[in-house]
Image (cartoon, rainbow, N blue to C red; front, top):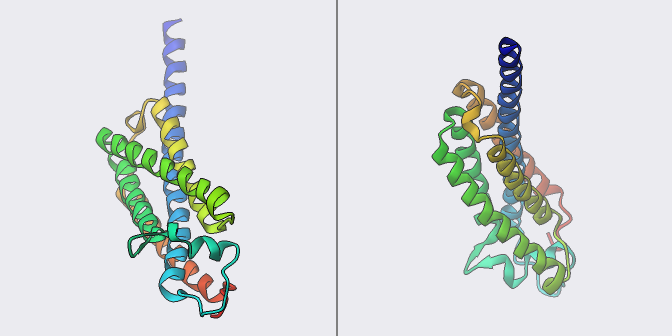
Length: 196
């Protein structure tokens, strides 16, 4: 009887291990998507703004050109890109090492990102009165990152799963990050930006 329980526990433990690693992989994929949205918005700030005089911004451009889209002279999108770059690097290290300090740091950072996203979405819905789809992609990505963090913590943290070899993490992660950056830059040339 004890042998059966041990086999059952082992099978359940193995399932949890695989599930945690898949969640951490999803974390990285979502961080790359958030990076792409932030890079696109940053590119709009640096290469398409300011709009020519006489053009009244509407929709997402009203959000991107609003006073709330900047911290001093720095576009929030650039800060978002920094946030996602941090999540990509820390998430990759966490998947590779399973160090608890990385999990704790990521939890704190994603909690801050969740609060900031909630604030920015409330500004779009209330004060600005317009929605930026790429901002909403970023907000959804941040919310998903935090949700994955909570689920992984509930399952026992990253340490319950075996570390993944760096050769299985970093090459695909670098290729994905570069690819989405290229797509975001190309997307800028296709975007219907007034006056450009």
